[in-house]
Each structure stands twice: as structure tokens, then as C-alpha cells.
Image (cartoon, rainbow, N blue to C red; front, side, top):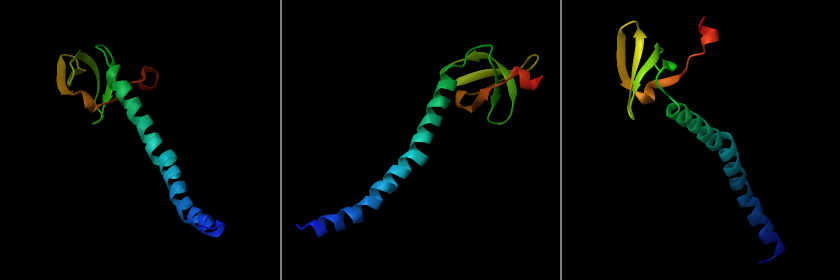
Length: 96
């Protein structure tokens, strides 16, 4: 193999490595961070937390299990839903 052949091979393979690097830093890595953040949120839920569901329902957690959550949405009204349906915590300062 001569010097010109190896340079041509490098020039033909280099774009694939660049595309792989771009894919990693633009798509895969941010998605993994977002998944970890969501997993941390779901693992940190506890009774008494004020939450928002994916459907936009605001409530307070009254009971929690591995797969399900009971949420009080009004005085004396509780609904049971999948734990994965929790979108995030309520911010009391913003809801006042």
C-alpha cells in the first residue's frame, strides 16, 4: 500500500466517523440524560408530593407502589394511575 492509497482510504472513512460523532453528541447523549432525569423523578416520588400528570391533572400523591400512584385531585376524590403517568412536580410559587 502506498501513501496515496492510505490517504484516500482515510478520506473515505473519515466522514463516517464524523457522522458517528455528531450522532452521539446531538442525539444519543442528550436522550440518555433526559431518560436518567425522568428515572430520577419517578424514583424520588413520595406520599405528599404535589404533581402534574402527563394529561395535565394536578394533584397530591396519597399512596404509592412500584407501578401505581394514587393521586388526590380534589377533596375526597382520588384517582389511581400508572406511576409513569407522572410528568413532574408542581411548583407552589408558580401555581399561587
